[in-house]
Length: 164
Image (cartoon, rainbow, N blue to C red; front, top):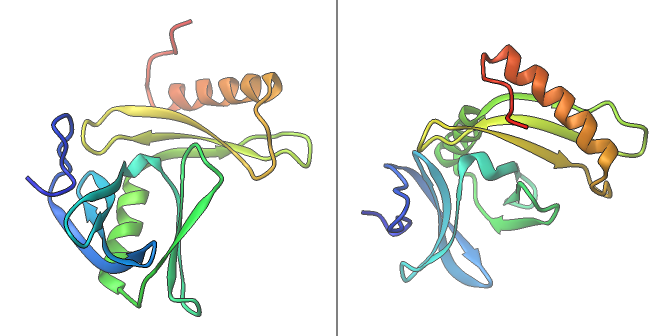
């Protein structure tokens, strides 16, 4: 078992690690087969997210930091990170591996949202996501458009229609 394992979910094999800092203390970013985790230098799990919950991750060369946003929050978190090419390649590959299909929603400006069908890399389960853009609030209008686009995506992927 790895430090990121829990009794209910195995993280899979560790693919890459990178030293960073969290709240001014040493920590490790850990990319496993199924999850992305932050582990304190002493080995305590700070957070762990399945890859399908990673919305965006980008490395800024000038700032030497990795900025991550998770699905369900518009707040991003930055972690100091040197040029860790192997880690960044694994990060990109795992996020892309979880993305099965995505589409931007056609909404009146300035509203922005997208839908995605992502795969839980631990179970193989396909999951629907509605990701709202910055400043966009949930609304019945977005729900209707998202449901319509997700139904088309499910059909294109050969998934059964969603139960009503």
